[in-house]
Image (cartoon, rainbow, N blue to C red; front, top):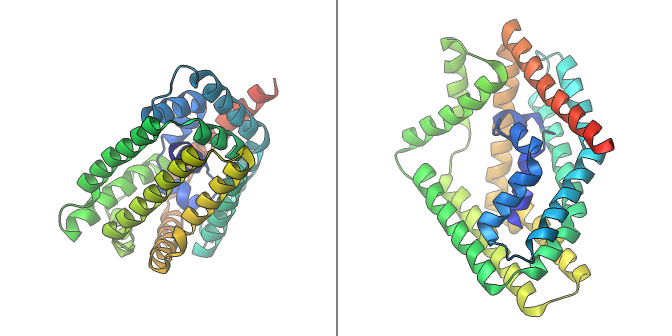
Length: 293
């Protein structure tokens, strides 16, 4: 369930601050979303033979719905960004777009709830254990990547990841630009232990939910509601004020970084940015046409 939602959240381009710092492979992922979603889910669950056909069908239907009903608004957003005066874009503008992106996530969650309920109700105790073990394995990688080294080492690792994505969108940066971006990157809140704690809490609550559904076998309608409640709580960090504050501050700092990135962009870098956005528009238009055919 969680991997399925992660995929859609990563593929949402609404919210420029999120998009510019997200994985550029998301574009490729969305183009092949059905296959990747199934492969990803199966790597967690290990589907049984009777589950595979309807899981694939649910994924196909959900992507068809998304491409037919949601992509047009993304195209409109991208087109607006292509025409924007980048010298005047503010942190507040980017945060407003990010909030619109969160609304899009809620729309997707609401539409996906029936499919997620079917999946949750079908899981065996062994498959829930498979998910738990896969999460543990991913957590080991997270610890290796983010919970080692000094603060300076972690800042350097985060900066390099950010610059890889920035170069995807804007091309090469000058030494002076890189220095400014490094300062803004380092100014962002850094608390990987808190991020890990939030991650573990979210996973724990999800496994508890799946076990409860498996044991009680509630109706599909009740299961949908349980899933919606879990996702809403997870997006609110389960009411933990410390976590809320940290992630809100991170969003603001990311928005400030991206705003400065847009302000400092040279004409050549802005052309690169506009052309990269156009690649997304072309992909989305092609997928919308395919969905209507």
